[in-house]
Length: 377
Image 1 (tube, rainbow, N blue to C red):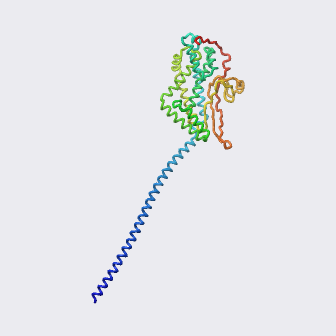
Image 2: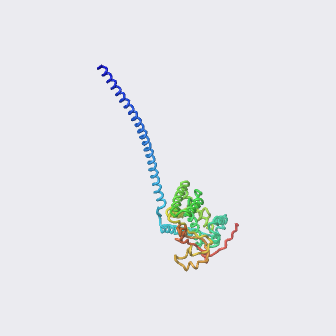
Image 3: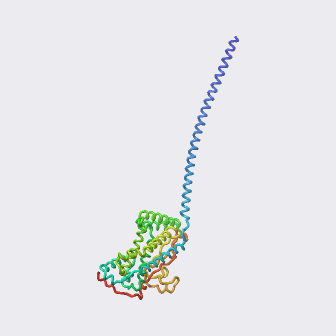
């Protein structure tokens, strides 16, 4: 009986232990399931954190990029002029003075004789060919006077014609975008004009400065000898003037003498003109500057030009010159144009900082005239 009781007690204990084991197994299964859920949630959070970190890095990179762009834009839009208007006027004055001196020295250094031209074989043909090549840039009046005025004792008209030729060449050098190397002059000018009309002055000015700087950098990289070519072209233009005026020497003789005696001065003129190109095109962006030039045949107007023989501020001389016709431009002027908002509308204000100097057709009054007979025509 006692043994039976112990056996029953042991069975009861076993049943209790089995029940406990089952409960523990059930609890373990529940905990395992909960752990799996927590692990999944942790993995999801880890993935979300990784995504957020990646987005943060992208945002940080974008912020840094935009910050650099903003700094670049601020520099683009707020960069101050490197030169003042007075600085540019000074550079222009130096160029005009060098043009005058070079023209005067050259005019005094050559002999002019229509008789010797006629006596030399091919002399007249060479002179007439020079005049033909100068027609588009010099005008009929000046060319006609070069062929009729006696220059040997008074080379004044030769000097004026040389000044005119250098001024015309310098005007192109000061204004060009690419020195014709890239053949992009007209398209760039048209694009800039559109930008100038639609954007504010700061944007337009900086675009012009950057575009011109890079266009010329590429141009001179494409043609490393272009500066030498500019000197050659200007020298040839001056030789044409001398030959057209009845220079006693042949074209080749005159060119060799120009190159040897005045090559350094002509090279200096090219350097000064290209310096002005950079000053007006790249170093002043708050306004647009360009050289003032008066076309031959234009009636004199004291508001836009000065007589080359008039003193600055000589109003009486300016009034006397009214009605006379411009023979040529002898000194470049300077024009400033700036875009501004007037009553909410964009308008351009234009000012003559320096008036161009001109020679009038009346400059030949009192000069000795000879009748040249074209025996070879």
